[in-house]
Picture 1 (cartoon, rainbow, N blue to C red):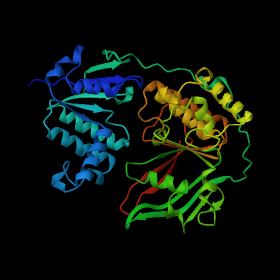
Picture 2 (spheres, rainbow, N blue to C red):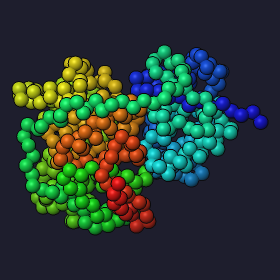
Picture 3 (cartoon, rainbow, N blue to C red):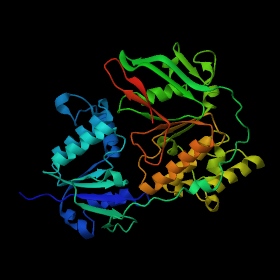
Picture 4 (cartoon, helix red, strand yellow):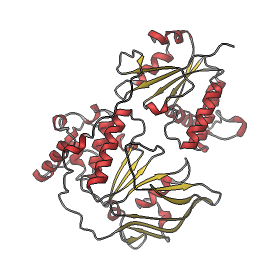
Length: 412
């Protein structure tokens, strides 16, 4: 039996991946992949899944899983990928482009998807496009990398680790020091949450203290987003429960702004809000005003502090460069700096390394490590991945059960 030839292609974040995918799907690729110009392909990606869900919603149809009479959006992230992959196979393409298929999946879902792909690889060709060395699939022998928009396939080079570029300068001090005496920033006692009688969280006990570095983990659908929304004060399910946020019991008359002033936050969705051509300097300065863009004239002291942060980042020469022209890693570094500008007691980082190549992961994780080392901010790092360059002190793990996810603390 003829063995199918699959491809693992490593791309850095400078490559216009969307354009490369279009060349593959429109039969215009050159070099080693030109054989695919006579074949029909289909794209398997998070964006393709989201577009499919929108189509189902718009036309009130059930296409991906008709036998179960369930729309794709009703499945967990891992199950969505499993079912959408079946849908792609059912279209009978000659090949499937896998665009970072393991992103946003918990460890068990990643293992299950890899096993599923290996089994399916006997019958259909895969071209996997990834950003991380760790995501290379072991059953694929053709491994290449693309480093620029000429889209030339090159042998994969050994991953090199760089020195910590942020250790050369001290982290700038805040303009106004936070003199809060509150040691327990977040305290949850026997906290439970249900939606439409469906239990999500079950008797959660979690205390986050000043200066601690936590990683929040748990399978897809285990309630991580729910627990974060309780911490930020956005979730009304916190009322009437034993939940204390920065020394105040939830529902004791505090305003949402009193809670949020104590929190710096990064999530990848935030970058989508900043689409105007602001400079790096303006993006950092906007953090003083908690605004999407800079619309007020900063004081000379605020400008001085922004300069100190640019010096810390070794980005002073880029201060007038457009934020939108930065690499993904540089954008996330600037967004994290914007979040910590006022040294809030708590910093929440929601999957800050997802979608980054190895070089940009080093950039972001080095910054997080330095913040953990030099400040007394508590950090909650949310990620399915265990990043080798990060060393959280302790892990809070959510484990699903029929009565809602339970929480377990693991010290590292």
